[in-house]
Amino acid sequence: MPDLIGIPREVLPGEKRVAATPETVGKLRVRNLLVQIERGAGAGSGISDAEYTEAGANLVDDAYLGANAVFKIRPPTLAEAARLHEGALLVSLIQPERNPGLLEALKGRRATPLALERIPRITRAQKMDVLSSMGNLAGYRAVIEALGLFQGFAGGQVTAAGSSRPARFLIIGAGVAGLAAIGAARSMGAEVRAFDTRAAAREQVESLGASFLEVAAKESGEGQGGYAKVMSPEYIAAEMALFRAQASEVDVIITTALVPGATAPKLVQRDAVEAMAPGSVIVDMAAEQGGNCELTTPGAVVLHHGVQIIGYTDLPSRMAVTASRLFSNNIANLAQELGKADTLVVDPANEVLRPALLLVHGKELPPLPASPPVTEKRVLPLPSARPAQNHLTSPTRVAWGSTVGGIVALVVLFLLGRFAPPDFLQHSTVFVLACFIGWQVIWSVKPALHTPLMSVTNAISGIIVVGGILQIGVSANLGTLLAGAAILFASINISGGFSVTQRMLRMFQTGARSLPPTIGGAP
Image 1 (cartoon, rainbow, N blue to C red):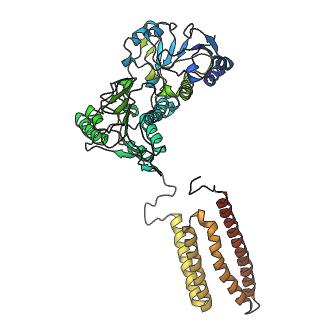
Image 2: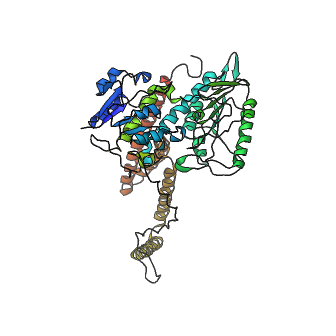
Image 3: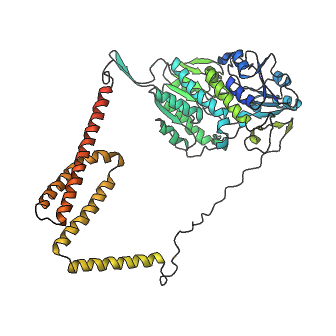
């Protein structure tokens, strides 16, 4: 019998996302997997029960009842864990370090919990990375929430009533969420500065048009799996000094700094908040893990010395329609790693699943082996296509050919210089130089300019026509025939050049007429 997947309604207050959409239900049904949706599960994301029914799902009052697997978003509560079918697969955010007692409850149900937050950040698993997809949304939403409270323009404005400078943003942390916040703020015209402990983030920050800040202390912030690590006290002190100095200059601070398995580091102290101008805004995206700001209250907005500190823990849920679609796509992609038929199979040897598996049928897995040390690899020279010339006394075939060809060329030049008429030598010298110089000139021109260059060559073609006309009147011999051919081909080149020029001019004129009349002025 096919496995049955349950999609429950999220019980956390304010959580509007759902772990499956009609589209992903259809993908699961293609494998003949059965899907049951708790009634009203998609209401917060604008998805009606009828849409799920049309996609092939069954509507139930209890999505846990009889389900071999449960797909959800937030970590289950202890009450939800107790409702799991014995031996069931649980795919969701688990976060055991922040949910004491949850693993023990799952062991009691002999469950197999697969923690989405522990999906490795490798190329193969990018399409399953819920942290990246949700971080992207959260970073964008953080900018929207900040500007909703900031009493000014994001970009600079010049009006008859006066002008205003662009808002100044400081983004702390240039991971997925931080980069999304940088992109959103820059697209609205704000001036953005960003900081990250990882030197590799500089290029990404600057590519989005933001300024990258550094501290005097030199220390690498690269951690496991692309995350940042805990820095030394000396480095943290230098960070505090930098943020304190920046706080007096910026209008908005967005913090995104998280360390896996640990409380969020306190980066914005009370004195830095008090250094900000009244009306400034702080968005603490790490509020759910304690916050990067000393004054953050998770789930609330705090006013301190005229500075509003946003501690929302549901930023992705505030874009529930899009967030549910992306999250459910991540889970549907992950389901492809869980077998191919109508049964969900967990393979502990799978490189994507293994780091995320907390238990298998209620039993803990042995720790992952340590990564092997990076050893220096010797780069062996590639074999040459040509045979190696080991001895000067035994040259290769190519060397013999070059030598003989050079001797023949020297003999020909000697004979021409000795027996050819002086006029032939003079004309042949001009011809060779003209070919060489012409080739160099044309080769140096970019391909995009070759068409305009045709019009310039009309002058050269005109000279050829004049020379050919003069040569025709001299004598009736081979030179006359060649002169006639030169006149014919040069005339074709002139006609074609003028034709191309006129066509290009018409294109520019048409493009200019198609521009809207308000360009350069008020509509």
